[in-house]
Length: 237
Ligand SMILES: [Zn+2]
Image 1 (spheres, rainbow, N blue to C red):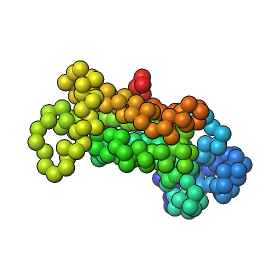
Image 2 (image 1 turned 45 degrees about the vertical axis):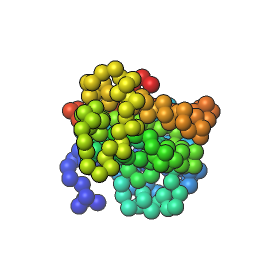
Image 3 (image 1 turned 90 degrees about the horizontal axis):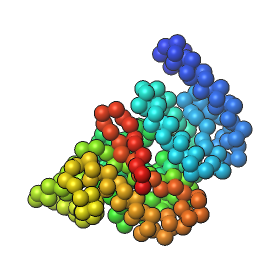
Image 4 (image 1 turned 180 degrees about the vertical axis):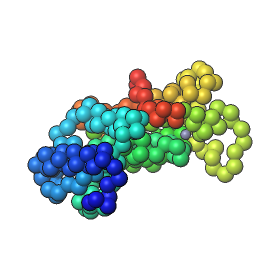
């Protein structure tokens, strides 16, 4: 273990996590997780956690990331092996494919925590909706977040409407309605409206997701990630 630690503060952090893991081990048995936790693992949410608690857990990870206090939880091979063939991610996220928006990193999560779909412009295409239905009704995610980001290239290109190579233009129709709704050419205004539009789409175009939200088993939210400070800001949706 000494070889693994890098500083006194690191020793303390890992020790505390190990204690926390042991303390939470009892709750894990019912979740089918082996009664063994490693120092860099955090106990998963209990199966009866609410959608609000799932959202709080996700946002707490972003706060750690912003503060430079990441724990990089659940990233060991042991954690992966413990999941076996059963996964139960507490959150599903539809994010942009942009290389600056790695969902698992900015929410400080690891194996089995978040079911992530990414497409340029964080657009809810039929295939993406189908994937998110799988993440929610089958795998049991309790919160579904559409995550846009400042200075999104896909939204910017749609705003400009310039000729683009290949099939890049196939993204545009999914973003056009947001431009009309935003009544603005300001990029970040349209980014936020695009998040709201995709949230509406998921809530209304998918009976599966609509029913889960009506039954209070799922909460659908929208957020925007800012490169400047690493913050995810929840939108009023
Ligand atoms: Zn983007």
